[in-house]
Image (cartoon, rainbow, N blue to C red; front, side, top):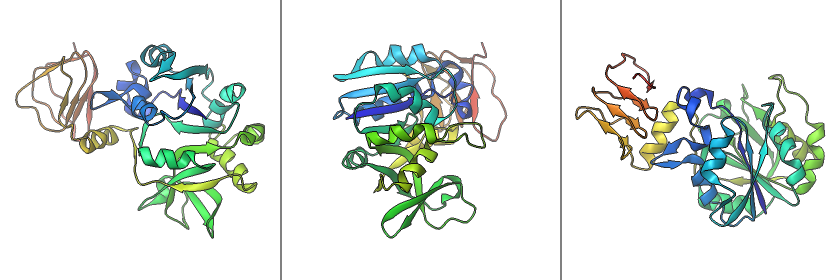
Length: 280
């Protein structure tokens, strides 16, 4: 089995951290998010990583093989959506394949269950309106609706899929969305229409695409405050801090993320999370 990892995006919601760190390599408790995913996929025979923003850093971190699994890179030069990324990977696909977002944390058992049958991984959530809703008829998934105003279910699409190889034949039928992108959810709908996908229910999922989500991920791993071993911080800093490599925090801070190799000599008054970068 092959696994396609969507790792080309710029991670705009984590700026300025992602100006210098590719979104998949943002660390949670000292380990890149991408590596948590790859470690959970030790049963596949090949990783196909779709790269774009800061591509060389991703390649330098992961290499040509990871934990004994071959790694193939394909470059998405035009960031034209998740299905656009799959189109770039299409020539490398030879059999049923998994697809994952690269900035989410998934349960190991959930991934193995997903691999057991062509399906979409879904999670029960309190409010599906901020996600893609998967609508069932009986026990069969029939619709996927992005951010529905009036949802009919509480099943959220969480960005993990097991496609049959036949799905690549449908990629050219994916339309350009209102956002001007080719969306993987439209490919999912084409598969639903042909009864090519079931669904797999997940027990654990944590997106890590915003500052608050980055804090939540550290908290789940009991890693707040997090201070990289090469960094130093003021003794009166609060508990809600993430301080990356090579930093010096000379004043008390809290509710803050510090980009690698940053020195902080003055605090910023902000009720929201502050991301500090290269003050000195």
